[in-house]
Length: 295
Image (cartoon, rainbow, N blue to C red):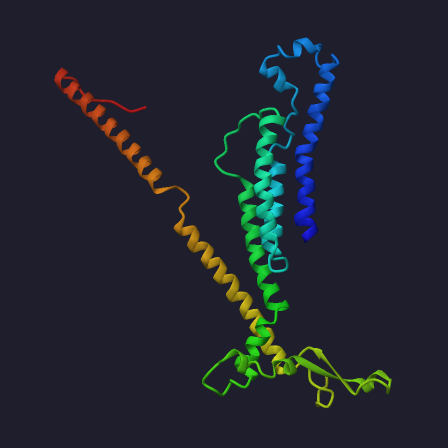
């Protein structure tokens, strides 16, 4: 993750800016030698700006797809694997601070001006980001629930610890004996080697070898598994609820703009009513019938 989020982004930034720089340098070199459309060195300084811009690199055929794809991949790595690599958001922030300046320099000085195209939003990329966000919440819920000790410690403290029958729940007291409870017992004599210790402990919730059902999952294992699944459901619903609440608080269109649009619509209706009324009064004065349809 560190290699992907740091070194790969540095390489991508270098290629995004370095490749157009080298191509433009080669174009200027060809122009100085007289190969740039028949222009010599003396006439190069007299070229209009649009001729100079023509020697810049054209925008690729995919437009901004590569830029969007880079940001979407970075967003996916940052959100999906943030529990496994907490440094990813910081590296993404530093990369974006540099990326926005490099892209501005590239679009202004190294590329030809692209043809403008009207768009109401980012199109399909919005749905892709929404899908990545949902996948990130579910993935992080599984990572936290399965790989961390939070759920087993919680189950032990409230179900098997010394504080079960007590009224207080102090963390240090309630977790006494947790390590012994989280380790299962294995009979070393089954390894056919008498020089080994009699028993060894390993991280699992299985019955000891002297149990009627040795090495089977204990009841505590199923309690921990149920708590992990419950945590996944509660965690993802909580995150989705917070996301929906924040989206509700931040409208897609500002209130001032909505008010202005409603006022413009109201003024347009007033103008139509006044024009219709004037037309009706004029017809009445002339003694003619009234018949008018708006186009």
